[in-house]
Image (cartoon, rainbow, N blue to C red; front, side, top):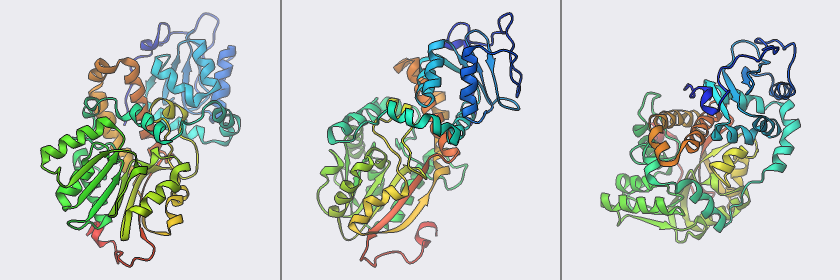
Length: 428
């Protein structure tokens, strides 16, 4: 998906399209200038460390720096020296900070720009020079019971009216499952819930516990479509209130219990455990604790499914995303996810990676967000609009280039033989 940002002039006087000052030389594509300022040389070094990507910078004085070849995917306007210095010092954090504040403006393909940046950040020439500094400058927030509540409140309690502007009709804020690429977002979210239910082989009157239930769509779908009884846990007050209201409206309050509490306090025994989009907020240091919760919750033939954003090798979440969007979040590797299951000797029955489905989900969300941006601006202001635009576009780019994955891990007791013989029940 492409979008053009507002003109560079939106970010501040003197930023948009200015010609070089007398005596300055603007470098052409793929060539070096006859003379660069100190600031220009700093940018040149940053671009070199990223592998000379097709990104053009334009400074507040009209000076332009470009070390790539071919046409640039986008032009970044830097409105002042302080923003430039912050960007060079810690680009992973301060690119987002500068864009949100309007000190960095973008002309061109935002998603394509972010894909280019992600590829550059993975280069060894960049990681040697900057990773240790970034790690030292930014420490992720913890996920203790009290800190988890604050972290979740920061993101999910912005107000249901905000999310209603760009999510699907049932308010699912997790990866959809598209039977075909042309399916609507609404249909794809229903397909995702059916896909989860088939994997768990739910039967009428099964008991299900859900850890992290969002606005309640999955719990209500399982209860009304599959006849199961669900206890769903969540620490977002806004989401729990919304879910309870929907349960009453659907006449499902006798089959679904929404509990405002931490997953660590789950009690009782169930036929199935499910968690969709919650593991990212748990923290690896609490995975064994989560495993003990699952172990005590499942009966002898119990089965479970964890649906989570992940990555192919361990790396901290982008520091700007962790600071501004998802405090305390971390997308695990499959190896790290096994620390939940191995201590209790659970058998992994199936692993599916639906990364490209999340990229398509984000295309829908970003498009809807842009359609509603004026209303979002009225609610929260310009900085908020730019912050969330960058978050959604950056997430789309991360899934497109394979920086992020989407894992569904199905598991059961190691000793049970109540396992499917084939996958016909999923796709038949």
